[in-house]
Amino acid sequence: METTKPSLELLRSLSDEHVLRTLMRERRATRAEIAAATGLSKPTISESVKRLSASGAVVDTGERTTGRGRVGTYYALPASGRALVASLASTGVVAEAVDVYGEIVARATAPGADELHGAAQEVADGPFRLAVVSAADPVDRHTGRLVALPDAPLELGALDVPAALAPLVDGPITVDNDVNWAARAEPLRDFAYLFLGEGLGCAVVSDGEVRRGHTGVAGEIAHVVTVGPDGAAMRFTDVFGALGLRRARSTAIDVPKLLASDAHETLAGAVAGVLSAIVALADPEVVVVGGPWGRAWLEPIAHAFAQAPRHVPLRPATVGDELVAARATALEQLRDAVVSAATQR
Image 1 (cartoon, helix red, strand yellow):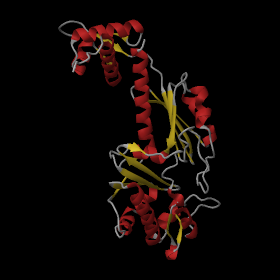
Image 2 (cartoon, rainbow, N blue to C red):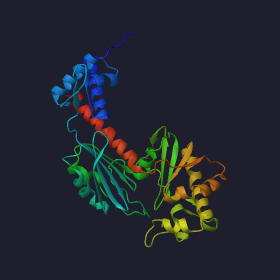
Image 3 (tube, one colour):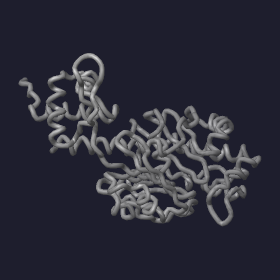
Image 4 (cartoon, rainbow, N blue to C red):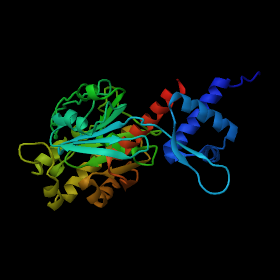
């Protein structure tokens, strides 16, 4: 079979990408340093730097090497735009501007989800190239709007996140719920992530991908039927109402009150019932447990779950911060955007 050789244009594009990604990691480098970092020849790197300099994709910093030997010129990226990373929760909004080096260059907070646009505008320095948003509510995977499900505890409403950010963002706006982002931060490929806090959530990760469901609300476990006080069958969310562990006039769980309660056995049994349903349907290798009271009560939960006919190991979340994965996704998308724009000129 005849082998098709890559075109000269493709080879140039690949070498240009190597140069750009090296400068994203190192911030500045000489052609010799780039050649050493990439394994490409010095002539190849020199031609690539010449092309990228001519198009404005890299710039001469004006700095030169010192000492013995040939003087080298340092090259760097020009201003490459920023990505917006935002979190929406009951405690308010966090907005961060992230640059191509992965640095958080600006950060703002606001007390309510409806202030997302204002918080994002506060950290903007011109239009963002893209945005990645984590929301403590279900998210419609097709529109990026928040979904107001029955008994939702955090009351963020059906906020249209893409519409709120569109005036500030030139590129794509990626929105997902916080439990899915927290799951993406874990170094596993086949598992379920159970979040137990003021709200209740679950993410299912299979072959390294979060399974979001047809509309995006897969993993909403609050309405899973489990065992409640005195062995009664009831929805998971209703167990906390029956035990008096909700915040006043809300379906949100009163976490301090729960942690101080003596309902360990009842709640562990309710969680074990939910875990049995997750294992039966998703077949995970392991279940990662996160959230303020999930981690605190991991031992009694694991003991109750071990009595189930089908069970898998439980382990505590290793990261616990959904913005870790959101920032990583934003950085990856930002770097890809910079490379794409530079190599297609």
